[in-house]
Image 1 (spheres, one colour):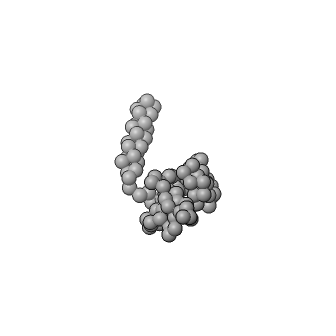
Image 2 (image 1 turned 90 degrees about the vertical axis):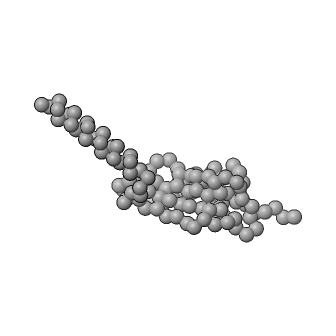
Image 3 (image 1 turned 180 degrees about the horizontal axis):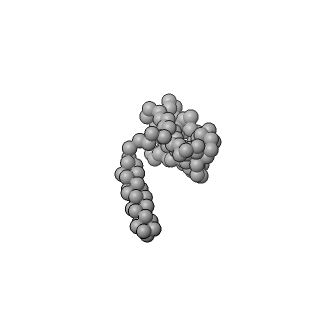
Length: 119
């Protein structure tokens, strides 16, 4: 009889996992997302042609720490295109955060921009 209970438990776990995977595209009730409206390049700036996403390592116990880690990772990646890339001048910036229990992970996505060269 214990084998039957074990088999049932494994089957139920697999079914629960399959259901949660099927809902992966649906918004999670625990999701806490902050988004901004897509925008054009700031006046007087030129932008790259590719958006970068930064997230930082792992989940953090503080959403502020997670946001800072995502923005730092984004700046590191964007700095490879424009050394003076800044989140405040990014084109189409989006900062999204998800929560898992007491932890959060944020993702910063945007196209790096920098001031146009003086002519």
